[in-house]
Image (tube, rainbow, N blue to C red; front, side, top):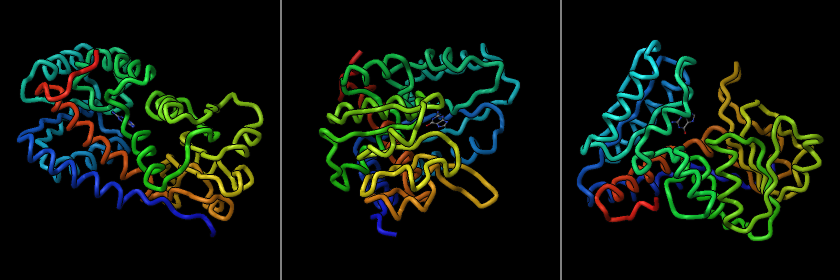
Length: 283
Ligand code: GUN
């Protein structure tokens, strides 16, 4: 292995310590996470987010609703949280059960309480390059690139995956830093032709080991956003053999995962500042 590992944990710990200071200065930050149903992966994520929030001093409520919750019941709950002055930040864990339209629920969130940055107003602000609530995972990736002083201006960045949670916001953040950005996805022809030219390659597809060493530019920076549960444990979207080719690589686990949680907590602080008028909400 020749690649330098970009570990998320130490960076995340620093961010979480700053969040704890901010929470103490602000006094009270109310975060409500909502999980509908009992999807095991979502349950793990919610537990981790909740534990980290509590450790930072955030007043976190872990709200669980049954699998058969109707769309109107969930919308009513979101509207109640929107109006609650004790609640600064709301997170509705995705995916939602099939009877519920996710887009409708996300639109029902008060944009300034949308700690995930998924509301169309927040997504639009990001697209325009305005400061706003930005999804935690891509923000975490940007913090890791900054920590390792990866030059983005003029670099060719390739993002594999076009989800609203990672791929699209990731591409916009890289573009804001003057990278030349290519977004690849399931219909992309000859994926390796694109990835081999990537100074920075971000894999966010959810397919174990789909980025093989022969797809990586020698010396390139490879960011693995995948968290895939397999019989061999948790593995990323990047084959670990890529470490023999890449200049920098994020490990899985211990790479992007801890950053997502830390940046989510940072977003909760931002929500609290909006609600207190310390920061002007851009909309
Ligand atoms: N499901 C997978 N990732 C996320 C996330 O970052 N936020 C929410 N709310 N749901 C998710």
